[in-house]
Length: 169
Image 1: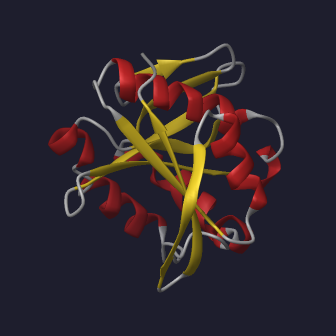
Image 2 (image 1 turned 135 degrees about the vertical axis):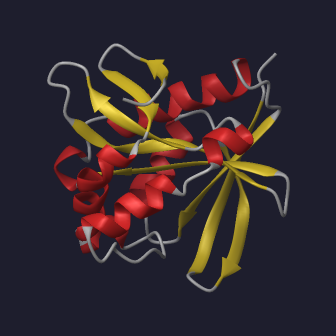
């Protein structure tokens, strides 16, 4: 099992390990889950496992995308976490959950815990977020997490709303 990062009243957030490949594969199979991400699904559980085996964000930067587990059942719900972008020096908050858990408040709860970890444990000053235009649910999660909308940016996947939060003092 991966190192635990945070715990909320309903959730446990921990590092992903290769044994989580089956869940990660399942999560990325749903085209609605990937609709606003720009990502493609893994071709197999083995490909997801290879991805996790090569994932170095935890070791390199002390952060990454973390598995979100429902405390009550031990079932994985999705992932949420912080990603460092060396090319810009920015850290972004990202999340992805199984469709059956949308609208339950889990994403916001996990996002707040990850932001707290970033500011408290990691000592970050600023964290950004992005939501592809046309994805109001993700924008609401970012807003409910305390982020402020800052503008828009364009890339190969489309027009993104950009958000940020500065370390509260």
